[in-house]
Amino acid sequence: MEAIEHPPIFRLPGIPDHVTYTWLVMVILAALTFAASRNLQLVPRGLQNFLEVVLEQFQQMIDDVMGPEGRRYLPLIATLGLFILTGNLMSLVPGLAGPTSNLNTNGACALIVFLAYHWIGARKQGVLAYLKHFAGPVPLPLKPLMFVIEVISHLARPLSLTLRLFGNMVGGHILLAVIFLLMGLDGLIGWALSGSVAGAVVGGIGGIVTIVFTVGFLYPLKILVAFLQAFIFVMLTMLYISGAIEEAEHHSEHH
Amino acid sequence: MRRSLILVGVAVLAVPSAALAADGGTGGWIAPFAVIAAGIGMAIAAGLCGLGQGRAVASAVDAMARQPGAAARIQTAMIIGLALIESLAIYTLVIALILLFVKGINFA
Image 1 (cartoon, chains in turn purple, blue):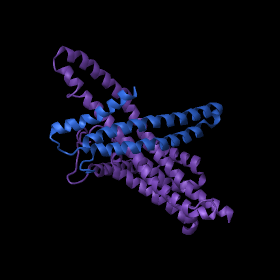
Image 2 (cartoon, one colour; image 1 turned 90 degrees about the vertical axis):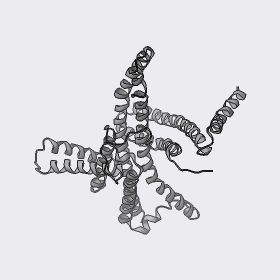
Image 3 (tube, chains in turn purple, orange; image 1 turned 120 degrees about the horizontal axis):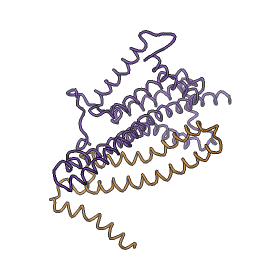
Image 4 (spheres, helix red, strand yellow; image 1 turned 60 degrees about the vertical axis):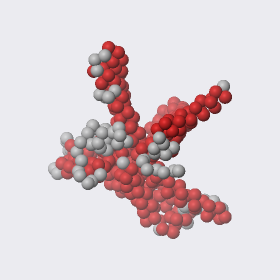
């Protein structure tokens, strides 16, 4: 990937790029929230209004998916969502690196989700009762088999969360990098500027087509993917947490 | 038809090793095959993922047309389902990326 992707412009020596840009995302989010909440007003305007609308979207989603039980998990879910969305969008800015296009950042987010929903489920109904639900509603001889299968499927959840975000972001970046490579001074535009007639005709037309294609289609698509992947990460987090809670309610109905 | 396909396959598999022999054999024989495997694997994964997602979207659109009132909920469920189907293709993409870009894998 290093062969075709340009490194970010600003790098701290000795610190990996994704860590630097994770810090940048943190600074941006902290500065935004600080500036918005410094002078809270009953009738919000400007930045405070914007952030309230954003958080109300999260609250709406939580109410739809998890019901009123879910409101206490709004800080976790909204923080994850805003961090991933900002990271995804940051990786689209030329000259910056995206923290979410590195496996380690995504793995950290997915591990937080994994630990959080098990913690919530175990606290809601006690460790033993929570573990019992991994065996599922099957006859007793099948329970050990079911338990193993459930544990494996739960272990696969953080893996798939990590890889989905990583693959979507990096796949898009490689696509963009290849298109830019075809388009740039080593490619079509360079051919158009080289002075030959064939280069001016084919390279000029091809360069214009690729520029229009990239700006008009690929970049909007990548922005859509950035929002969609943040949405999916948050939505799956909510489903996992509500799954852990619902098991608790189910449990109390039976006993 | 089948015979020519087999011939093409043999030719495709033979080209990198011939190129490698001319190259002097640096880096082992695994690298050219890794590139081919990444391409073929990603093609199969993308095609089948497209089939699966097409079925899912078709049913979802059908359901939305029958019950426009429930469109928002169906859409949410569809997007989650699409993400879960897509992640299977993403696994293949990650394997392809590992094959293409991770240096120092020594399979042999």
